[in-house]
Structures are given as structure tokens and as C-alpha cells.
Amino acid sequence: MESLQINEAQLFDLRCSLDCTISSDKRRQHILRVEKCAVELGRIFLPREIIKLQVAALLHDITKELPFEEQIRIAEEYGVPFSENERMCPKIFHARTAALIIPRKYPQFADPDIISAVAKHTTGDVSFSTFEKIIFLADFMEEGRTYEICRAVREDFFEHLPRDEDDLPDYLDQTVLKVLDATILILVREKSYIAEQTFHCRNHLLVKTSI
Image 1 (cartoon, rainbow, N blue to C red):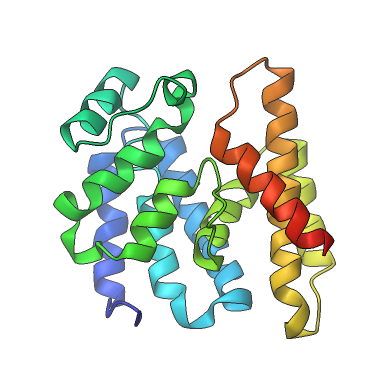
Image 2 (cartoon, rainbow, N blue to C red; image 1 turned 45 degrees about the vertical axis):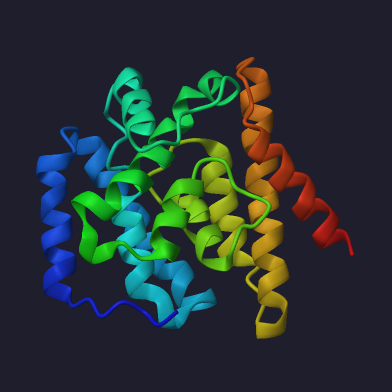
């Protein structure tokens, strides 16, 4: 699919709309840093899709601050309710609900790649595309993340970036796998329920990168 024809004025307006959509300045700053990181990664892996990556980054957390009950209602309203297993992972709710409301609230940005990347940015997915992997990593690696593992992944990523373009796809997969492993370990230590998509994505990439 061709890149969306979006100009800087539209991106500026979308950024400004966060002031009304997101009440927390901390969350707004995170979103802007994710956008910046998505641009950095886009220049490496998808230079022709940077504009779409920016939009996906700006929209990825637009329902993050809604109460869990409201997010459950939104998912039911759109006909894709959370399963019993998914309800054990309320922290992932906002990915689906944000993706669901994009066509209605932001129809000018209702691109399949953007919607899918927003929907998958918390859990990963076996069908992860390069576009989706970039948003997933940008959310984890953005420079404001305070977790040591987030800083370590970011520093290691840019320090060991391959010079040969042919090595980039595997390097991207290895980095996503590293983030999934770290996420799973954190959730295990917290005794939190782990989304099935995360396990499946991790195992898929483990096999893929071992071949």
C-alpha cells in the first residue's frame, strides 16, 4: 500500500490534539518520544513509511488513560469484546480500543498498517510486520523509559546496528525477541498474567532467528 499523503500541518494538528485527548503531560511526552524513536527506526528499516510510522506512534496510546471498564465497553460496542483470558491482562486493553476508534475519530489516518500496529503494540503477534515491529520497539526503546532493560536494549541496538542492509531484517527480529523475553521475565516476576499472543510471537521469532 502506498504511503499516506500527509503533510507536516496535519501531523502538527494531530500532535496538538493530544492536549485534548491525553490529560497527563507524562503520557503526552511519552507519545512524542515514541514518535521520535519511530522516525529513527523508520530511517533504518522503512524509510518510505516514516510518515505513517509517525501517525501510528502518535495514536498508539490515545485510550491509555481510559478506565478499564470504559475500554471493555468500547470493545463490546465495536463487536470485538475481550475474551476471558484477555481480561486477565487489562494493561493491553488500550491497544485494541485505540485501534478500534481510529477509523471513527481519525478517519484521515485509518490506514490498515497504522491500525494494525496500534492494535499489536503491547503484545506482539506471530504475523508481526516490519511496520508493526517498529512501533512495538519504539514504545519500549524511547529515550524516556527509565527501566534499565529499556535503556540497555536501546544502547545495544544502536551500538551493534549492522552495516550490511541484508542483515537488518534478522537484527530487527533479534531485537524484538530480546524485548519479548525481557517483558515476559518482568511479568513473571510481577506474577502477572501473560497474553497468549506474546508467548506465540516470542516462540515464532525464536525459531525464525535460529534457522
